[in-house]
Image (cartoon, rainbow, N blue to C red; front, side, top):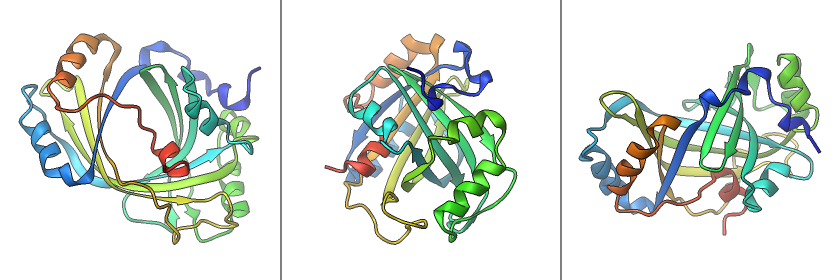
Length: 235
């Protein structure tokens, strides 16, 4: 049965935008070593973008379908979130993002909301503002994928190969806040989850062999890691 979150905006249907996303996880005490692994890698990674804080608000169905799909290990998974950058926590102008996974491949559709959100307002007001200012394709998804479930943030560093074909991000200093029982955004009570560090290596489908060679040079095993799942199921 098709659910609204599967009825994605029409221009995300093409396989051309699918990319590999491989993750390596290690404890935060290894941050200096992780930076060295990237900067001294034989692929020649350089800084692609200034580091910044990444913020995400995950929306799910009433029965947490996105969480269940991930916990069940389904090959086809979807997540809807709001994403914004920087230290702002009250007045924000986020992107709506629909992220899709197919085994190791992923893609996402983004839509910049044409307005600011007041994150000190009740959830009912925040969600209504999102709905009113979204395009019809997104409104269809938001009919049922409309439950604020988790808000998280972390620091991210960006690296890229000289030809721009392989990108690496390094995420650390993670914090998560459960939203399921809150009438308005909860930014005070943190989830007591482990602060893992995540190295994510990304490339287009045609770079699969090269991607494997690059991953093999890191002294870490590949791992499944979902910040959304870890925020709601920390142990």
